[in-house]
Image 1 (cartoon, one colour):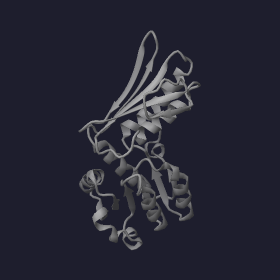
Image 2 (tube, rainbow, N blue to C red; image 1 turned 120 degrees about the vertical axis):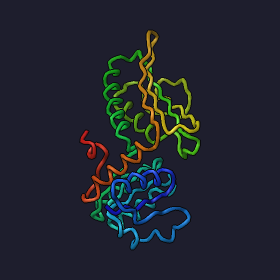
Image 3 (tube, one colour; image 1 turned 30 degrees about the horizontal axis):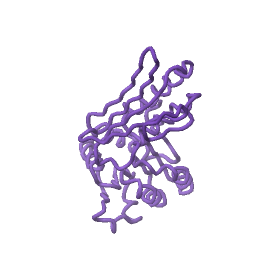
Image 4 (cartoon, helix red, strand yellow; image 1 turned 120 degrees about the horizontal axis):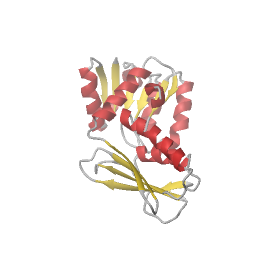
Length: 238
């Protein structure tokens, strides 16, 4: 499989290492230093694009790849206000697109567990739910895309919480997400249900970027022969 890495930072390099070990070929590496090579001609040399850049550049990058007709996997977060537009671009260009706030297999299982627990806790409003996420200091968005996905899963099933906020608060209707930036943490997400009697805590802790990188490559292997819009649920058959 020929891969274009759109964004060649720590994640791009982690994906490259795993991809080369599996026998794939990297035909394009795009960073701030070589943006002039980010052309349709070069993009179309690839079987699939894997995009990990910044919240400010992600949509433009995805748009360019989809308009070139190349299947595109995107793991950049904090740009999802453009997600429906990206999905429409995918279909209009007969391409393939897969966005995930987190590609780790463990995190995607955690998403499912989170929803299951939230559905159970709906019957017990005496428990107040809050969240905390910890990432390295180079993390550009807060809360993390993973935390937002977890929060949305809780809000689907909670009759008290109507929205999330990224700070400590005392408003019953707001789901608190506390964001901490501590090196070298690759990512820890904790959901806590507290009552006067006891507490229930769910935590996922990433030990390295390898889980994110291997999941992104797994998504690319799934997507590169397909057309249409997909999610990690499709990849993992969840």
